[in-house]
Length: 319
Ligand SMILES: [Zn+2]
Ligand SMILES: [Zn+2]
Ligand SMILES: [Zn+2]
Ligand SMILES: [Zn+2]
Image 1: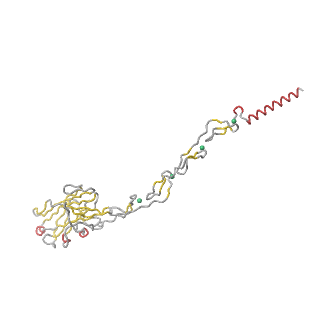
Image 2: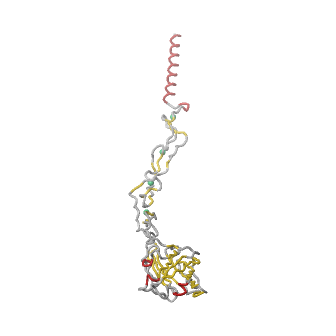
Image 3: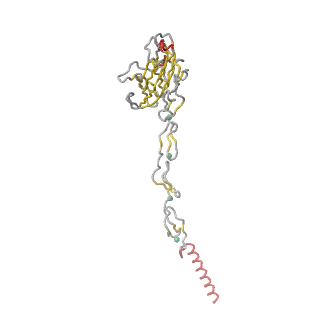
């Protein structure tokens, strides 16, 4: 009998242990939860009883890009719209390019070249890119004598009495200045005056016997057939035309009456001022002294430069 009781006791204990183990394995007795990790939207949650712990993680949004909306790096959930590309306009050398991601669409526009001028090679009207060389100046290849300030140059021209007889003296540019204007040389918006003092000196027997006839005109270094007016206006201004950056630009010339002139002892001497009114920065105007005999059948002064620019001409470039 005792043995039977003992066996029952053992059996009851074993059953109790089995029940306890089963309960521990299948329920959350004594807080024995089995938590699944938290997600963006769910806190840690017990897979057996549904008990939760803590808070959801919340989404971890990566900023939107041109082509993707804000996107959670964990779960892939999106929010809003992609930003769309922010294209900068195409240029001559670049297509449209997204300022954010560098995406490129279409083709560069290509340059839009103007014709070359005397001042510039062919130039893109959009971006200013210059290609090639300026147009060659007409005077570039000519063997001319370019005068320097303060230096007398031998000058041969016709005598006063007989145009077939040559006389030789000197011509000198005493000074050259650039001014906006003064009482003699009226200022003009966007223009500057180049004013020079010129001196002609003839001495010796030839000059005393025959006198001399000087001849002077204006020309353009770039375009020797540039027009030069035959008359002067009420201010003594004579128009001529220069070509500046491909445009025909009106310019003017003014000769001031002799400051002094005539015979000084054995010397025939004239000193006077010449000015040109040209667009600011223009460097093409030239003062040209030539042999008076070149022009005997025509209006003798202010001949077109193209007709008088030969090896004998003395040129002062006003720049
Ligand atoms: Zn649980
Ligand atoms: Zn998420
Ligand atoms: Zn983009
Ligand atoms: Zn361009």
